[in-house]
Image 1 (spheres, helix red, strand yellow):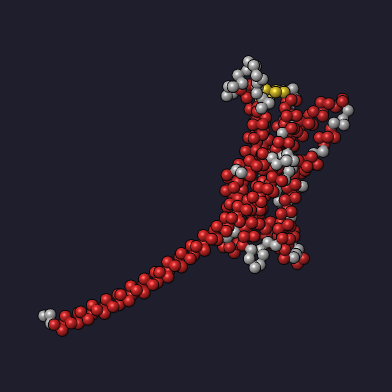
Image 2 (spheres, rainbow, N blue to C red):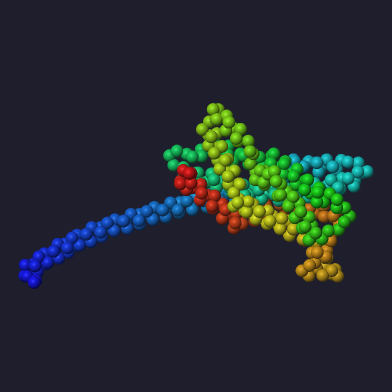
Length: 351
């Protein structure tokens, strides 16, 4: 049976439970407030860091754009292919031979201009965003001091030197295989010319010995690594940057972005050429028809100087619209952001 003393004990237990509950709830509330404050402070810190990184990234991209616009392959191509001017010194009896050589050289120069300009733009994006990521993380101890930056960025000379020389050789061989047997008198439509360019690209890009990234960066840093005893700390840091760059150049993302740029470049080249394949006003040819560019044809001898002239629109001395188009491409900008994100995150560098 239930006694009064049992009731008193029950209420006493309830009071103790309520006291413990209130005390626990109070402590839980204080703990929750502390955690909420910590989360808010962490979010605020992360927001500030993200804003700082975003500002640094955007500033770095402006540097990329200005650097890309200021560079030109015109001088390099002219030095590498001085053969063009020397051909004019041949005796008239070799006029046909001169035109045959000009056919190969003109197509080679312009195609190399498209390749090298696209390569330069994407390589600059990679290098400047890797450096940008390191500079963002620089605090008391610089990860990439000025001497390292200069040594690292000077590696682009490979693309302007030996890489360009080898690219010219490979492209020239592909042009010879595709157009060598085509008579200068043979007429080609724009669609047929596009097919010729596609064949040349297929041969250049299907080289089993090396990928396109080979032309961008010299592969002799391993020799430096073997001389570790004579390397300075800056040399070691430069080698690390170059190796990280090679890894990036061998990535599927880089290949995709470079292909996007190349497709855009050759498409722009064909758009420029299309202006020369339109029927004159008043001509009976259906110039407004969708297939008009397959109707209008020009002798290859007339196409050669047109092709040769395109190099000035691709890599002109003044800022090029073609370069600007590549720099502002959404996929290029997205790729640049991913590179910067990877190298401005401490965890990535620790790995």
